[in-house]
Image (cartoon, rainbow, N blue to C red):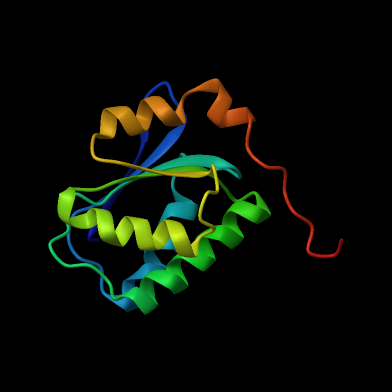
Length: 137
């Protein structure tokens, strides 16, 4: 697999480190592997480390991934999410942020994984996020 998935000790945060560029067909198997990991539970907070990537998806693919991520937030499947990127990955992370609901407090972008982990473990991040939105309202 082109990714490493583990739980950050004593935090309950699921850390996903992409070790190589993912091909479009590998996203679904990665999502399945994450959902089967020991640290996965509904509402899990996630740190996604993208610093090893040398190429990035195109804007259309990013928009699709971001909209799917937003659905996972709204359904309560994923909790707050931190993206960790190098300088050249910031544009991609920002596009992801825009397409997943610009200004949504469930997503933040960092350059340092320690800062991302600190943000994910803050009480206000865990408890002061918008409630689930009903599509039937």
